[in-house]
Amino acid sequence: MIRIAAVGDIHMGPDSKGVLRPAFETLPDCADLLLLAGDLTRHGTPEEMRVVAEEVADLRVPVIAVLGNHDHQDERPEEVTAVLRDAGVTVLEGEGTVLEVNGTRVGVAGTKGFGGGFAGRSGGEFGEPIMKEFIRYTRRCADGLRASLEELDRRGCAVRIALTHFSPVPDTLAGEPLEIYPFLGSYLLAEAVDAAGADLAVHGHAHAGTEHGITSGGVRVRNVAQPVIRRAFAVYHLEPGAERGAGALAEASR
Amino acid sequence: MTEPDTSRGNRTSGADNTEYRIAHLQERLVREEVAELGMRIESRGGTVVVSGTVPTAECRDTVVRVAEEEMGGTPVRTDIVVADPTAPDRPEELA
Picture 1 (cartoon, each protein chain N blue to C red):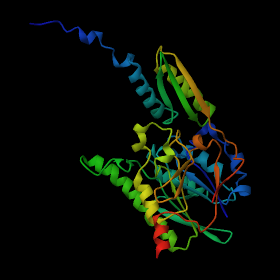
Picture 2 (cartoon, one colour):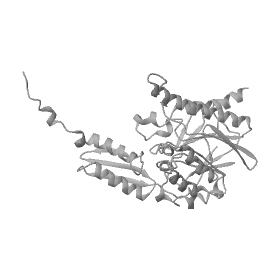
Picture 3 (tube, rainbow over the protein chains, first blue to last red):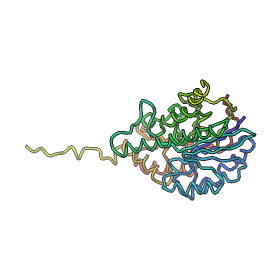
Picture 4 (cartoon, each protein chain N blue to C red):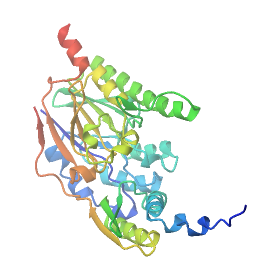
């Protein structure tokens, strides 16, 4: 069994120094890895990210993160990424990482993702250049997610997890105003997860949403934004070999 | 025929309109120190209700202060929760 701890949207700043550390120090007893689903800071400054880095440094479980939109606010994503990496955190954007948990290869593919909306109610690559770029950017994120999940499969991962900040499904947005759904996620992310297959998709971003959702290909989705899970982190237990998604269905029919 | 245009003077200016004030408050919470996108701000009767979850008590104080400043004389009611930093007491089994 693989034990996955996850939280997003911790929005740390100088006044939150040390707030999550006591809970994070319990991680080696209850989890094999910690996923951070973006929006770790408020304004994306290196100073704020240093607070985050201190919270997760030397935890004795691997820590894997994606950035969120807040972590881009100061327009220094490389710098804040470097702050996390210096603290031993693996930061993913359109790439994957593999860890060994009690002899099982666990892969995490990550991208921040972006908005655009959900199937049948989404923006398209049409019209003004800025509108086309909006959707193309989301598509690039989704393509990166798909390619990295496929790569994790080739690398023999028995468990694969998709980690994003924006949501792949509308299910986990329930509670948010419908009008802002296109700014909260995109079906392109879910399509990527379903095409490549995964055991679990974890995201944040939607503070007023709900924890549980599922893609149309059957991959479980969890919104781990801290205001949603109402704890320092959530823990999910996964048995290897129960993978969902169209990728898995295709595999089974071969 | 020239009637004096009096309608402009009778219009509610943007600054006095609760709907626009709510929009401006939302923008200010994002732009200023708390960078808070997650607040729900709604007009209820003669009041404005601000609700949501923030990471610290300091953030809550800032949101309350900015809301009261931005809404002028309109009474502001708040229901703002500080995120719980405790470890979970149980996992979810994904069978």
